[in-house]
Length: 320
Image (cartoon, rainbow, N blue to C red; front, top):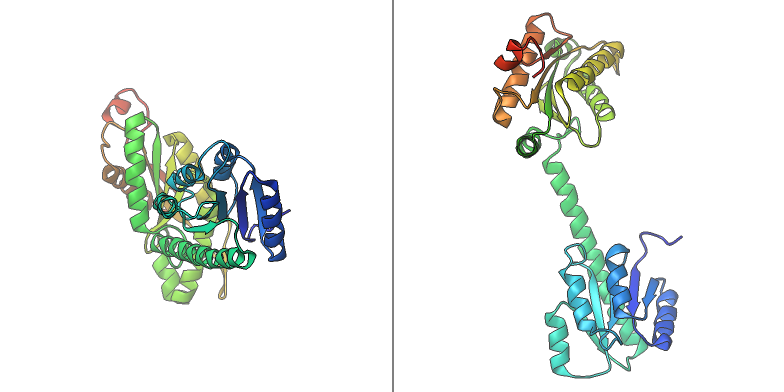
């Protein structure tokens, strides 16, 4: 099995002797290679496999290597891959055309082996820098949407995702449930044990959310000791069942902290669309928040659903 971190070079050339030579040079330098003798074969397979650098022959039997280069670079997933064109023609116009259509470098046949390897090493430096930049950007993006303490998503990201999910729910008339969870008497925990222990409790509760939700759900820290869960494709009855499981799990599992075991309970409000009186993501949040307020007013450590619509009440149901 190949090392996924290894530098992968794709060689596309109809000359078996050149492919064999390049393969040996790459192997000697510690690079891995995959080979194609025809352009159409490479065009079909390269988008689906891992590679960092492609060495493309300009004159392939079934297509122009420049066209293959352009097709690869037009794929958003392959745009940052490095491509070196090989050509037997030292024609300035051909080189300009190739570079204009996406090639990153050009080597004329017959090439000098040290020059080819030097260009590959230069390409690897550029590819490695691009990978580092992409990874850094990915980490920064993740940090921008993550709550620093709990590692759940933050309030802003929740709002963005809920707006998107609500619009999708309305367009396709699919159910969407929203759950607000409040940690009961959390101020007392901070006052009694200090904020450091309070943070331990918040992180432990957050871990329960992360372990309980589906990959399609979203858990976020809503603010302070409040959390929110977005449950796509979930009817009210199922959302209430899930919320009750969360409530019971937290009640049954004291949080182990440096100050010892601390019992915790939560109050939960649940709202679901479609609902005759909910027409926006903001109204969905308000409905869940009102249900949460009712849960707290009625004694805490319980789950409450949003008020049913007038039509539902008229039918004698309690479904949202």
